[in-house]
Amino acid sequence: MKNLLLLTLFNLCIVTGFAQDKAIHYSELQKYLPSELMGYSHSSDPDGSSFEMNGMSYSTAIQKYGKGDSEMDITIIDYHGALTMYSAASMAWSTGMSFEDADQKAEGTEIDGFKGWQVYDKKDKTTQLMIGVKDRYLVTIETQGDPQFARSVFSKLSLGKLPE
Image (cartoon, rainbow, N blue to C red; front, side, top):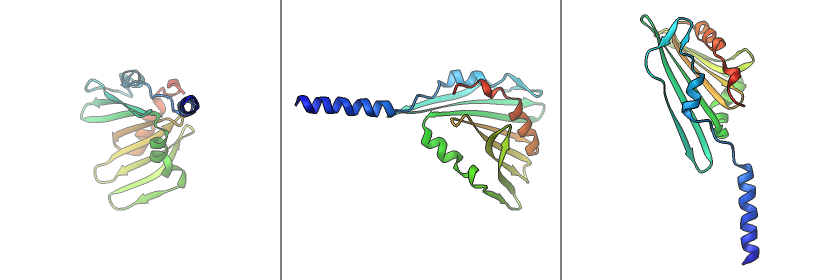
C-alpha cells in the first residue's frame, strides 16, 4: 500500500511538472488593447473571457473601435495554457497555403517577423488578419478596407510587452 501511494505521488508530480502554465486573465489581456489607434477609438467597453479545464486554459480580450462610419475589431487570445489549440490554429501558416476565388483571397503572411494568415473579402472589402505572437498569442484584426491597413494596425500595436 505504501509503495502504491509513493508511486501515485511520483506520477502526480511528473504530470504536474508537464502541465502548461495558465493563460493570463482576460482583464489583464484587455490592458494590451489600446484606447485609441490610428484615429480609431473605443466604440464600446472591452469584452473578454477566461477558460480553464483539466490544466488547460486560454483567455480572450476583444475591443471594438470606430472612426466615422468605419469599424475595426481587435482580438487577442492567449493560448499559453492550451498549446495544442494554438498549434492547430497556426499550423496552416507554415505550409505556404493560399486560396483565391471571385469572393476572397486568403494567404499566409509575415509582419515584423510574426507569421500569420490574412483573408480579404473582395465583395465586402473587408480584411481579417490573424498573426501569431510569441508562440502563444493569436491577434486578430478585422477591418474595412484593404489588407495593408490591417497590417499597419498590427504594426502599431505594442505586442512586445505581452508576457512570454
